[in-house]
Length: 479
Ligand SMILES: Nc1ncnc2c1ncn2[C@@H]1O[C@H](COP(=O)(O)OP(=O)(O)OP(=O)(O)O)[C@@H](O)[C@H]1O
Ligand SMILES: [Mg+2]
Image (cartoon, rainbow, N blue to C red; front, side, top):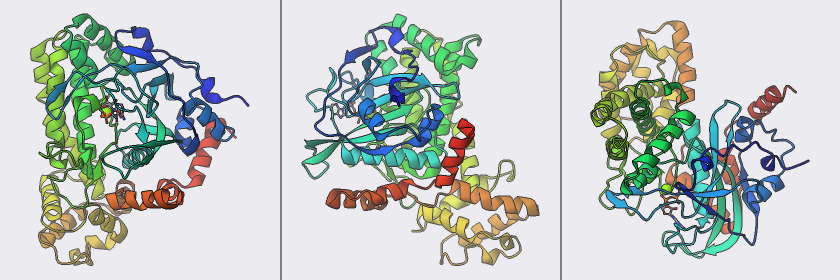
């Protein structure tokens, strides 16, 4: 059986823009290739049957880099912690190829840890195995919580010794392949602005609208229409992170995708208790990218993007489009928190007070952010509607609990019996059973580091019952 990755119909969309936007690079060769993770769910999205796909196929394509495509290190700059950095670009990765999913969308395979490029700046071009494990886990956890995110297709251990300041060293190496909706970043446009290339900005914008926003092709000013929709997508993404209790950690403009998708999971963390100052990156001394700042930072990054875009689009219209950011954010955040509380869309007519009281309760007590919602999911019974003292009765003596229970019960009383039944499902769908707190990640990493024991890693990933995947395979291939 031939390797499906070498026979995919790759579509060189980004490559066709020409070499103003990238450098053709070669992959490193590694002393060892052990496949540590393969994402069969993504194969289904590409129309590839996982069953005959061998581990060796992944290794050949995404570890040894046998390929039918050219590898492109994408050029970009970015604002990092507020400072403009013109020395960026893919320094340890490249665009491996682009292909259509069965949904008709164009996807990227992008590598991380695949060797040096002209943008490596004296660094080694590598990814630590722990870094790869962390990125796989984050992407899958966020995906399961409904966050619009890139996902990892494969992680291969590569047998080199790496030296890092933030991991006990030498540490193990890996190479990852990520599937994302695009690796074009805000910083891709910022670089073109830096060089004063309005022509290249226009060409790239035409490409972005054509490929990623085709429904806007007939809009009056399609560049402004693209920006308007991007504002909404990024505001929604920020709301998804906030509801998931997730702190991305490095919201530089080179880590912001023009499709409004979340990606690059380096020093991220899920917060244990509600704390707006919770900060993921140890080097973020000023807490610039703390949990509570994320919406504001996203808005700020969108504002910075107006500089390159205004070289080819009306700047007043761009400014106006950004005015809607916090309306979009608030609406998306409210909907998500209501779902975490078990309510379906439209069931709570004036949700502001309930949401405020819920956040006050989480903020002013030491109850875990995820634990609170887990207890709702586990404890829920339709009887709560008749007796508010039964609601979360074992959670302990919390500040704001009495008024919170009263208000929650009031909203339950407006639901029908059928809606109360549906509530259980909503609570289960929006509140995951496993949360990726730092302790959970360390509990997965320690056995790998100490005894090369990968079982806890696979267990943490294996939420989706096998029968669901089998069913998907069967229905896809009409078995
Ligand atoms: N070990 C390394 N070798 C070479 N370049 C690196 C290395 N680590 C980071 N870089 C470069 O530093 C910049 C910032 O890194 P950052 O951690 O945001 O991105 P990344 O994680 O490498 O990649 P991505 O944003 O695609 O997930 C990027 O240009 C990246 O390519
Ligand atoms: Mg990055």
